[in-house]
Each structure stands twice: as structure tokens, then as C-alpha cells.
Amino acid sequence: MQSLLAVIDRSVLRKNAECVCRFSQRPLIAVVKDDGYGHGAVEVCHALHGLAASFAVATVQEGIALRIGGVTEPVLVLTPPLSREEAEEISAYRLTASLASLGTLALFGGRFEAHICVNTGMNRYGARPDRLHALLRAAKEKDVRVSGVYSHLYAPESARAVAEQTALFEDACRTVRGFYPDCVRHLAATGGMLAGVGYDAVRVGIALYGYLPEPFEGRLPVRPAMKLYATVADARMRLGGGVGYGFAAGESALHTLRFGYGDGFPRSGGGGVGNLCMDACVAEGKARVGARRCVLADAAAYAKAHGTIVYEVLVNVARKAERVYR
Image 1 (cartoon, rainbow, N blue to C red):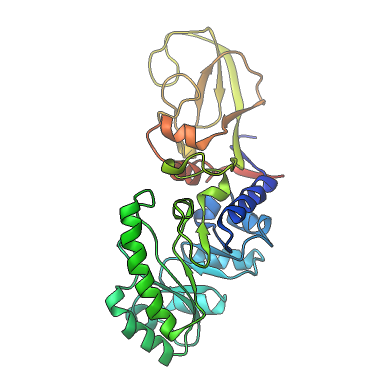
Image 2: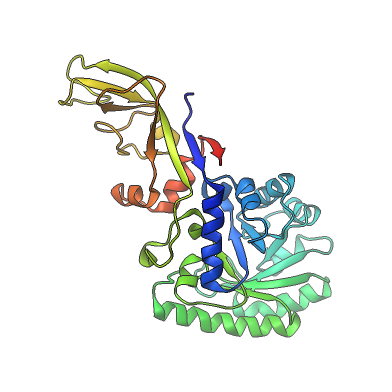
């Protein structure tokens, strides 16, 4: 087999989710955007069935993929729709829209479900707090079913930033609940949850997959759910002075692993001698052709070693891999 193999443990995913639920004591909105952070969104949803109250994705297309894959729980689309076609798909596939403006609302022709997205300082998406009344009045007139209100913390490790955003969010929640008294409030992603932010649900992603944001490392006993394996594609004795692209000295026995920066690893990705090739990694030592070697077991340690973050590593390295679940 020439493709990378991603081995994903469903039981670890469930144990991580159970850990989150015990810690938060709140319903779990499991974030499975970007194909479940590289773990396969549909399979993650099925693994968390009965634990997650609902799921969250980045795009309408991701939400549709969950419905086609048999996911029946509520699915929140975090990016507000960008066209009438996307608004129609949200309604047709029973997805929950993020409602952030009168312009977003105008895209819908019929009744739909939404969570109000409020900008409290991250400045990514969300309605301005001073425009909520107008948006909510229009939503009521259009018979929108608003079942939630949320925002996002931009620096959960900063007590000051959290306090500022929380104050804005609470004002917004009072406004929204004046129109929709039963809507669910959620502000905390993994970092916010670990910083002690509460409300009615937690919207957790990275902890489900076995990692925590860097300022909160060690706060929960979660474990990585995925390991990546590459195949030994060649074994030889050294000839000349090069190893891959460049000069190198060292052992006489070499082998080639079938992975490289074309598979989503950084070019300086390690695993062998010098930089990775696009589709190969030359490493020292003897190996049996066809054998599999683990090339990634701890994405957080790998991210630190290569100057990036665990989120980026996860969504990149498993993108082309063949996934196996156990």
C-alpha cells in the first residue's frame, strides 16, 4: 500500500468526549469541521452518538455530508450562508444556520432553524450587539426558529479578554432571550471550557481528538485518537554522497518511506535525513520493504518541533491518508 495509513481509535474518541462531559457538566456540541480535524467527520459523529447532543461544522457542504452519512443529530453550520442556494440547502437538509445579519436573513425564503452568532471581539463572524434588536425583530416576523445564541473567545487564556467578551455576551444573551426565552447559550470551545466559562453547552473540538490548546496543556487526561503509518517503499546501501535532495553523511544502510510534503507534512518534517521530498522520506537504517512505520503519534509534539500548531498538523497530514477505524 503506497498511501499513508491513518489508524483512528473510536474508543479513544468516546473516552475523550466522556472526559469533556464529566469536566464541563454540560451538553456537548462536538465540533467536526474540516472532516473531523482530519479524523473523518462522519465516523467521528457515529463514534460520539449518544454522547454529543449536537455537532458543528464550518460549511454547508460539510453539514450535507453528515446528513448523507446518516447523522441525525442537530448540525450547526458555523459559517453564515453566502448565497440563496446555501440557504436553501440548510433548510432542505435540516441544518442549523448561523444568523449574523439582516443580509443573512434575507437569503432564506422559508422557515428555518438558527443560532444567533454575536461578535463580542473576535471580529470573525457575528452580529454587532447594537444591531441585535433589529435582527431579532426581523427573525420573529419571518418565523425563524432561533434555538441558540453563541460567540467565540479569541484569547481564552487571558482573564481580562474573557471578562470583556463575557460581559458583551451576557448582554447579547439577555437581548436574544427577550425574543427567544429558551435558546441555548454557548461561548466555550475547548480553551474556554478549561478557563471555566460555562453557560448552557460547550462547543468543543480539539479535546475530542486528544489534544488541548497550548496554554491549557495537561488540564484534561485526553489521548490522541489517531496515528499515521507510512510504508517502506525501498531499502538500499548508500551510493555517493546524497540523501534525498542534498548532501549527507552517515550510515551506509538507507530506506525510503512513502510520505512527504505532498501528503501534508512540512518540508522540514523529519522522519529521515534532511528535508522531505514531495512524496518520499529517506531514512537511515535497515528496513523491510512493505513494512509500515509510525510517522506520527503525537501531533502536538510534532507541531512544536516544526513551528506550527496541532490544529494545522491534524487537518493536513490525514487529508490524503487511507483511514482505518478500530
